[in-house]
Picture 1 (cartoon, rainbow, N blue to C red):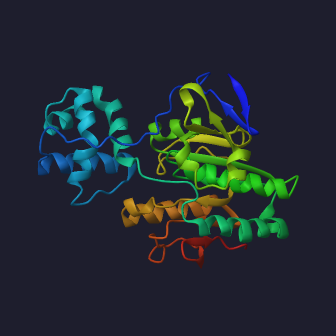
Picture 2 (cartoon, rainbow, N blue to C red; picture 1 turned 90 degrees about the vertical axis):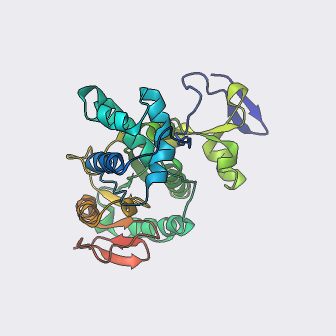
Length: 309
């Protein structure tokens, strides 16, 4: 690894131990064939069975734009051929690529900034002041839909900055996603510089290394963040979950809008059981849990809490 200093900002050539970073963004190419009703229903059913993503009607354009590459990769000339492949034993691995292509979504650092202010001003203050909520003294957070990493690194930066203010504060994070492509990019933590350009300069200096050589124009999240983060390739509806401890905070934002009501209710109830007493669940601002049974208390829009007792 080559390291140089430029105006006190560490710059690194990431080519040692890391390949060129592919952030997992879907390639929007036109499919070679029009998808029939039967093929669309078949593909939608497989996606639901393996991810609980409910496409419903009117998502043909999404299917066509995201699966054109998969047809070319598998040598299928039509969607009917592709559906036939998915039904054969040699097509089992392709189902993972199918779900991967459909589940990749747009995200950015510190999305919905009020959630991070709430973490700083309310959640962490409660953690320090309330022994019943604090538990063993290590703050644990789960980013349930980590995508390419912008959300979990935003959380990690918030927690690390709090640690700077409160020496001795301990924290750790679990991060998961159903997309292997997205999760691999998140684990690397390499981003184009414009992706982090809105962060204050002191935050960029503290938590990112600037690349040189082949990595010029990119930055990587520093080891001080990555050492606290565990990554899991997982389906939110799998059993069992890969966790052995409960969480003080769960981020599950802009995910449940893709699920039908029974799946939403199952997932929220599952996450409620994974929260410590007094733990918080954050969902997207376009998501509401008001029609679901879950036992959590609404704190403010998109923020819910498990009762302390």
